[in-house]
Length: 113
Length: 115
Image 1 (spheres, each protein chain N blue to C red):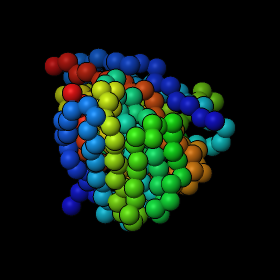
Image 2 (tube, rainbow over the protein chains, first blue to last red):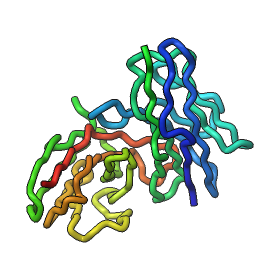
Image 3 (cartoon, rainbow over the protein chains, first blue to last red):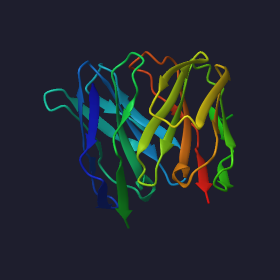
């Protein structure tokens, strides 16, 4: 069994300040973890993924995430928020086999000018 | 060239009607999916096909019937539409449905509104 919890449904930051979107997971197997971004009226785009190599993963648009097995976390960060980062962000866990991919409930990021 | 394309993007229809949404991927992937996203942005898996074979069929009313004529296409037909079917439906694909490392590639979504 697997699950993913996004700890904040809504995060608001000022432009130019750091972003932290929190994600915790549980899995019976060694999972892969993903972050996706969804801009309004758009599909989901992959930001980054962890698949058991380096625990610090860099993605597109300056985002990165660190896999911490001891804390079962995969938080998404960015040093400086940009207005274009305003979107919905989804943390995803996948443990392999023909198992469903499990999505978190999403975090809406608001960037204040 | 769009990797995963769905049509139509918007669909407005009356209760009781039947409608279809089409999806095509040109990535050469083996596995395709249908997800439903509700008004709170929650994404729920509906179906998954691998090489035209149904492998995931979640608890979805049998008014919903997926069809995969080949591994590049996965269509969704909905009979007797109800108000609760209003949502955004996303098609997605992945290289190998068994590989835990494979990411999903999503279409832009089809927004269905049932009046």
